[in-house]
Image (cartoon, rainbow, N blue to C red; front, side, top):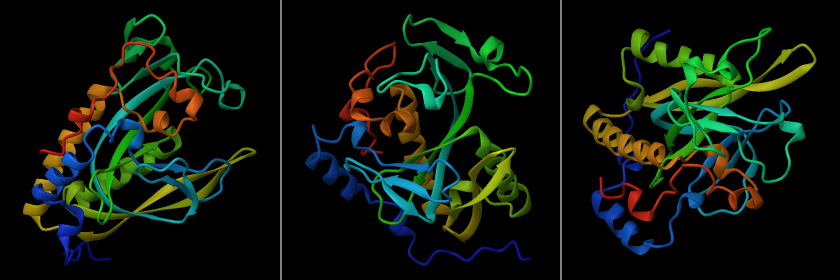
Length: 260
């Protein structure tokens, strides 16, 4: 199979102009907050579909079969919950979380721990209490800001394999590739869940891809500084009311990098 990708004919659909970003920034000043950002989730229970919450929407739309766009940036995140998913109370916040996979902050006390040395981040009997994830920033056609997609631990291997394929086999940076993401179901014992399948479907011209990557890196950096995690943005309203706890600083409107 050929490793050559077809150039996208309309790369500008993935890269808003500086004029458009400035116009939107001015128009939405004081309105666009972090809870307005769009998110992508893998539906639970092996449903084989995504749930997509568009920017500004109250609820996610289910039944989405595929996501297509440019993966502009990504970084690891860690989160430690006090209870398993099915036993959490409404609005319950994590015990600890990390926005870069290296240092975690205990939300109740503000204590900072090294993730690599934390006992909750070590495997015991084949599993660990801390959940290691990766947050992707995906720009679809005609998006003005990237969508946030938090990959669960079961998806990390597939993303890593795709990244290696892009860089070593196709010899292209990931941020230059238009990627189609679908889902397939796998079983582990009695559990069935969905994992992502990443497929390259096109390539951006290098100059446009470079500009897009610079914009994305600035957006991702702002998200990390502000403690923005896709899982938080998918939380129920009751959870959102408790997001101010701990040492994480809420993002301000001016932190969103429209002026990049």
